[in-house]
Length: 467
Image (cartoon, rainbow, N blue to C red; front, side, top):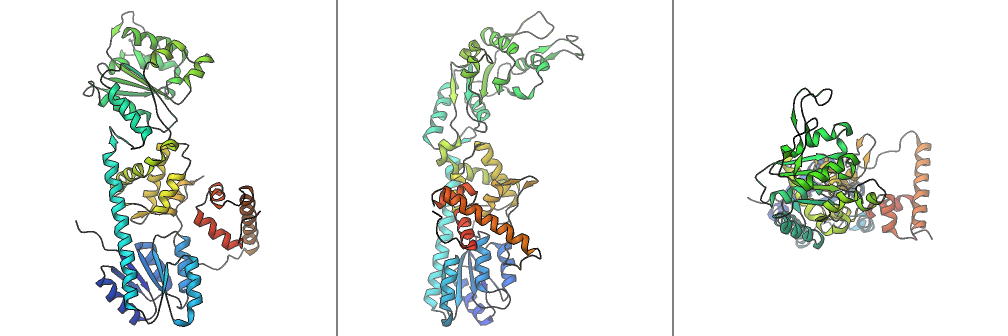
């Protein structure tokens, strides 16, 4: 399959310049799109996500500096090169400060122009190779539906391999969202029961009065509404694996009966005096400290001892941050297929945000964030803006990424706008002071990327950290 050409957008009101750059750019392996209007250029950038944008400094209505600001405010991944005459070097330097990668003076030095194209082409190819490597590594480090190459998760994989052929009961512990059900399924798939049923139930989702019937079944007429006999989950999972998630939510009265089943292998339906023999592997999971629960009388210590013969402790995502790029690559591959979008990966600044995020919801939260980002993005690569917007769900759902737009006139409600701006400035100064002038910490506390923080510092005229 032929790789897509890098995309070059050229914005200049001189058709001769557009013609020259098109000829050279196509010769250097670029797909070239040109336009003579700044606003149209921004619309194309929003729709096409170019790899390189070359823009003239002086144009009617929307000039080069405004385009640089708008693209950088939207965290667009494009490399931006400003084109200018000899008399505008100061403005070109200002554009570089705002985020442009370089500037070229007219008339062009053709070799320098070709060198610029070569730099962008090489970077685009390097980024594509890195994303392909991440996707490939994600496949290689997958084990029974789980992904990770960190020492912490590899220890878990090794433990599953050793336990799966033999274990009859196991306890999986870890924070919410760490993948406890995946571990239970891995124990099932890697053991001799893989061809039999895997039955899962969330103990916190079952009405307490129906719990015994759900687990052990009932006879017809055993209680009001029992119009037919029903097999419980133990009988349903006979020969296979029963996964009891959130085992800490199981009522104390049923904990004793579960212990008896684990010890005897027999279940007794509600309303029956005849026990039924079952052969079930029972895997339980919890995000609670069951030892503390047992000490306080909320969990039976004898059941804990019975389950705790084999315990698998899952690390949080914060303890295995080196796995985030591989998890990200796998999730993006999944959502790209589901949403029929050609999303190849995530930009480096966006990946840094993902790796540094606190992730209280662990892998489940990471997956949900990437699902939102893939759903909302319109480009081939998830940008810093895509990820930041998806990390911040609003009361009404998800705050979608804002479109790329040039700076627009202030609203009529100027006093209100100035008041809000003043409040934002005061809050930023306060946070920077509290963090001792550490801009990285201040950005995290404010929920911003460092680049977004620097933009706000510039906008509010905060030149140096407040002491």
